[in-house]
Length: 163
Image 1 (spheres, rainbow, N blue to C red):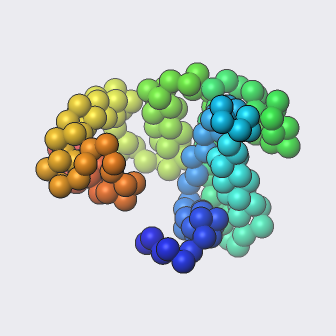
Image 2 (cartoon, rainbow, N blue to C red):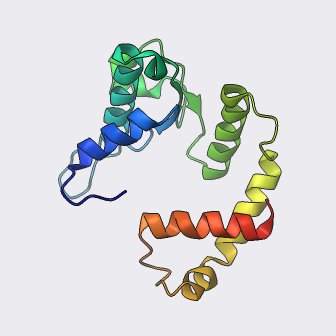
């Protein structure tokens, strides 16, 4: 639900509270060319997730997270308090992120029905190749699709394509 009166941080709290799994890519910490400062939204969200797991009730203690970064232990240069966390390196490659995330989901969720990495990548490529037409068919501007609309398009496409 999108509630305009809810602060962004409260939305993050709500989403994290409702989520059993968390995927946190802390690799995007480059300096902003305009102000020379990094964006630390993902490390903050990881911190909230870890806090919920540590201090929450029984359901929160069952949380499981995947921490991604471009290379192992790079994060120690900018967020040393995460020492002891073993991030999964993706080398900045979105396709490798998909492989890492899929491998983690198979282990964390113990589900055997998750498609192979190749099947996921092929499905993603097909969706992206047809995205402009998919968005336009839904009456949306492909260059300005809001996240909830994007999510709805993905879900509908996956259902229609049997994957």
